[in-house]
Image (cartoon, rainbow, N blue to C red; front, side):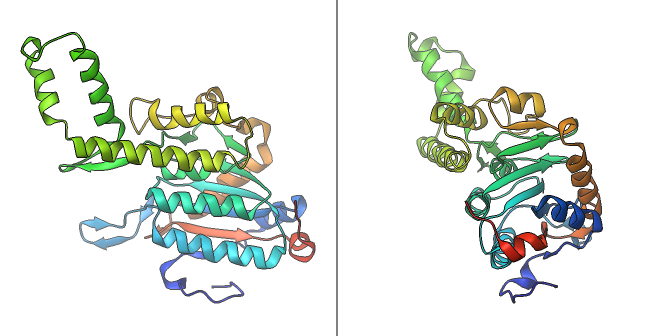
Length: 296
């Protein structure tokens, strides 16, 4: 590691100072802290049949803590940042803590998504005052996923089933219902419904707390949160530039920021095929920010 400070979690994280000349040059020329959060597409093999799960969790929490402490020590004030995100998501609480800490650290964040920032990765992308998206970029809904038997389902599913049943039975007796509706009613678990409702509310509050840091229109914030948590048919729904723009996110077309966009793809390509068991975190603090600092 080339970090100036020691870390209690260095063995559990993959954090380092970035030395790529083009990344360093862009940071220096624009006086921006450069920060990358990248999940590899070639995860480490844990056994002959098992590979590492690239998921946001404790390693990523500790990794961001390590990197952001180093950045704050060097900047002596709030700097502006470029954040490149490539992640399939992970734990809700971990993603939220990372997003919240990012917003508290920087005065302005420009997020680049050269490929995928899904689920918890989308929550982190919401920290952006600007979110730059290209033709292959993808955000996703942020409905919470929960275990259901041997499967994983969205918290929206039991809530949607309850709504469907309420609509159906408002003017019908049980004996009038076809078998599929009776079976659905019998299988709905009140505890599952409470869990789904609570987790959905929690995610909505998390997303609102992040968006409030860079957006002032509460009505617009609520509309975005409602759409991202309850407004799509499935968790894998592709939210591209046009869709992100249509729901009110501060999306920027990659054609408007060609230099930064090309740099983000170059940075992704450097790490995306690394054999890793956790997200890669890299950063660079420009000399001007390190010496003078910036505050707002």
